[in-house]
Amino acid sequence: MKLRMMILVLSAVIVSLVSLLMVPKLINPFAMTGIEKEIVLSIRFPRVIIAALMGMALGASGAVLQGMLRNPLADPYILGLSSGATLMAATGIVSGMVLFGAFTIPVLAFTGAMITGGIIGVMGWRRGGILPERLLLAGIGVGFLFSAVLMLLMSVSTNEGLRRAVLWMFGDLGMADWSLIPYGLAFIVIGLFIALKRAKALNSLMLGDDLCHSLGFSPRKETTLLFIAVSLLTASSVSLGGMVGFIGLLIPHIMRFFIGSDSRILIPASALGGSMLLVVSDLIGRAVLQPVEIPSGIITAMLGAPYFLYLLRRRDVLGT
Image 1 (cartoon, one colour):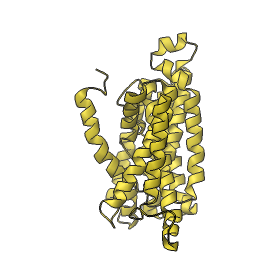
Image 2 (cartoon, one colour):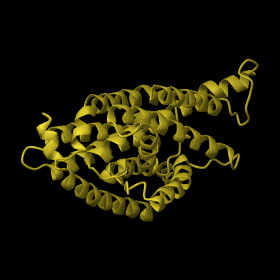
Image 3 (tube, one colour):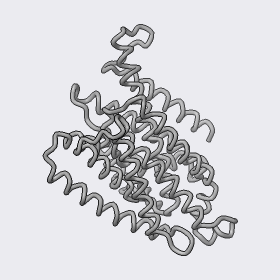
Image 4 (spheres, helix red, strand yellow):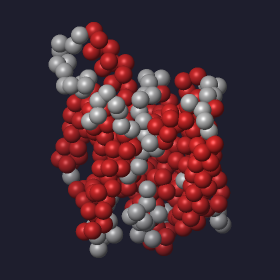
């Protein structure tokens, strides 16, 4: 188990270094020109870090959500958080809002996601705690509502910011900047801390509410805490670079195949796996159609959808 984790960590480091030094070709880090140093340090480096942070948040939140809802098809975006974040961010982009300078879009996206999380949490709350079934249905309903409002906004808008908003919706990391990293890192660390702290309780939740209670945990309290963790992780990811699908759905299944279902190991492993996938997806998006860049969300969907269908065909997803 330790060897597998060490291999995973080493792979993440290698993938990050390769992505960092593609400018657009692999360069010698010991013989870089001034322009190459500027590209690596000012453009590539923050972009790789943000991609790694986003993938980490999505992978970990997917592992938590699948265990919390006891649903192998659960995805961080199934709760509708991304729809609220995207609606707020797209509104800011289309309207040209610059209230917080460079932080305007991330702040709007994070605020939208957390407001949506609050609405869904209230709708999923019953008798002193959050019920997973109500939470799931509330997320789906709110997500569809906000998506419809977003499409309405796009259909009536003629602003030049429309294209930028569409790219952002598909996970465009072209706006990556050093200033976003401390803010994103702070909320992702908080979310990961809560998730890892309650990993043992998450293991008991996966066995059912009755067994969870018999093991000394309160199912509804633990569900509430884990929902807060998922909300922070997903909101931070969306606010940093837009919507990126399939990472939270696929990575936990892949990691579970290699290291098992123990959440104390699965959550950090999924975080590392998610960071690697998104860094690689961003690298592919930059390299395939140069000088045009393909948003990372499109690459993850193109990579993830066939693999998901493959898993479904083998019935590994449902564990049968």
